[in-house]
Image (spheres, rainbow, N blue to C red):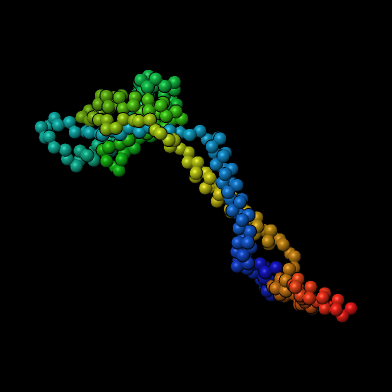
Length: 246
């Protein structure tokens, strides 16, 4: 074989020959990649339930205006952005979650709802969003809008001189937010191509059949003689000549 070449002190692997073999069997690699990709997609589709995300956006304001100054300074905005973490803790507290469960009307406990809520600041500003994830899009919207109704009042009572205003309420999502089934298909496609390439490489490495003179010379084996390979045309011509002589 030309894949492995033996010298006096080492054995070298011919990467060019490996590439040629993989290129020659590219159809096998492509078929295996597609098969595994489709399998991953099907398994993900059957086993992973889609999740829907409802989103509300709120504005944090810690400016009270009690000192007679009606302007909002940069310090006020910075403090508002930092208060997002405080507001997140308040919104996910047991007392607020109990009210959210009651107002939303969903048949879930606060322990089941709290892990599905994600609260984050938008670009480190005083605006933050609340994401509610659920397998039922209507339920996700009900929970999110219940938070939008309850959170501003609760925060105003707990944090003095601060308030929260609702910018956007939740709307029913028209498509699932997760999982990304195409991502699973791409992972399966990559694995199928990788595994099939490795298998073809290993099969080529284990193939010890002698197919040409080059295979012998690659192992420094002396060649005693070569049987010429005749094409079909030459064989037919020789057969015709022998018939005439006969």
